[in-house]
Image (cartoon, rainbow, N blue to C red):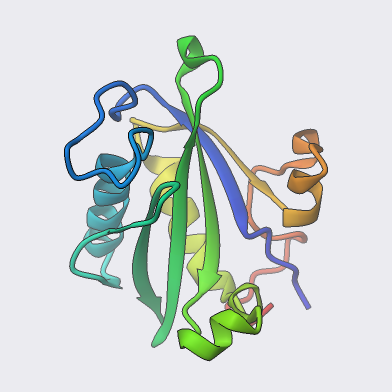
Length: 162
């Protein structure tokens, strides 16, 4: 069975990180244009997507379906050295509804095909670079150097659940 790295980081200079918008929940909730871009690219690739990104107090999220399974990409901006381009962090989750979310089921059953869809958009975009996929536990411990260029742990190609 293939393990999926559900957390992705990437850099870009193409999206707003300086002008807070009046509709931001918090002044630093950048990422609306990044989420809209990713949503439109996923739709362009033939996936069913949500109408528009949603906002959280820390960033944005976008919903999409792969093989009739609903996923969510939670997106936030990390304000580090922006001379190289802003660092964006995306966390891929399954949409599980209210009770599934409460009981921590969003990290389980992420389809490899969902991670591949996000990866294709990021890796082929001329607006995005330095795409790295991480296991949540490594990222939380500050081990970003353990990130990989693809979301799958092995070279197997599968579209099954994690």
